[in-house]
Image 1 (cartoon, rainbow, N blue to C red):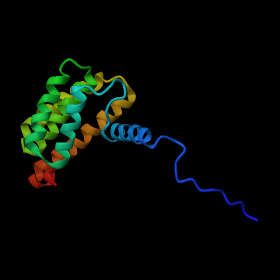
Image 2: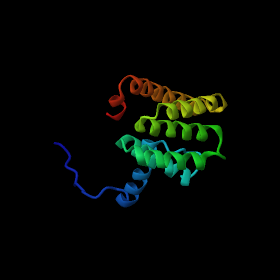
Image 3: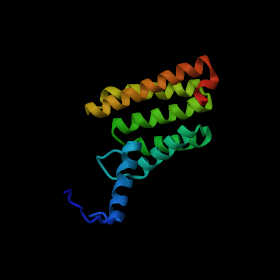
Image 4: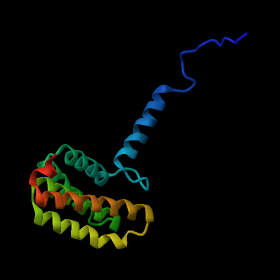
Length: 146
C-alpha cells in the first residue's frame, strides 16, 4: 500500500530571504557584475549603459558610456577596456564609425594587460562581437539598430 504523506504547502525555508538572495544572484549573473567587489557607481553605470544599448537608445547609451569611461580611468585594465568597449557600443548605435573604431582600438590595446584568463576571454569575446557589429554597420547602417 502506498504511503500517503501530508502535504505541507509551506516550503522549509524563508521565501522572502530566498527571493532576495536569488534576485541579487541572478541579476549579477545576467549582467556580469564583477564578483571581485561589491557593485560600485562604476559597475552600476556599466549596467545602465548595457540596458540602454540593448534597448537601442543611442543618446542614453552614449551618456552612460562617457560616465563609465570617467569612472574607469583609474581602474585596472579590465575595467578600462570594458569602458572603451561600452563607448564603442554606444557609438555603433549612434552611427559614428570613427568613434567606434577609436574606442575599439583603445580596448584592444588594453586586452594584453588583462591577466585573468576568464576576464581576458570574456573581453576578447565581447570585443569580437563589437567588431562583427561594427562591420555590419559599415555595410548596412540599419543592421546595428535591429
